[in-house]
Image 1 (cartoon, rainbow, N blue to C red):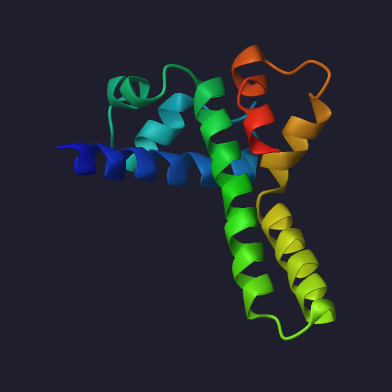
Image 2 (image 1 turned 45 degrees about the vertical axis):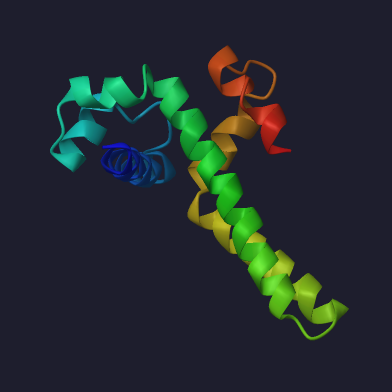
Amino acid sequence: MAKNADAKRMKILEAAKRRFAHYGLAKTTMAEIAQDLSFSKALLYYYFPDKNRLYAAVFEMAVDEIITETTEKINKAKDVNEAMEAFLATRLTVIKDNFNIFEFTYTLRNEMPSDIESVLPSLF
């Protein structure tokens, strides 16, 4: 049962990430995410009580992606220059792919909703 719940949660996060990365937080609704997944809104709200908490989880996932991908590339590098190039290129690619996710967080840094702000210190 827990494995199925984790799979549903990941599907939700992936669908939300696509929406947030393309449209941003303000232009994405929970109903659209649920529709993308053919889930009920109630099921979506079971996993994430509101859009800000879902966004925070997606943001955390995007940061984890940067960490994982850059670590893998650095570990494969033959020297320091190759490691730095891999780090910068990978970081740039992930940020470009998720620009609206990172940009929203940056622009609201002084007026961050508390449920998003609560997850940020653990990411840095």
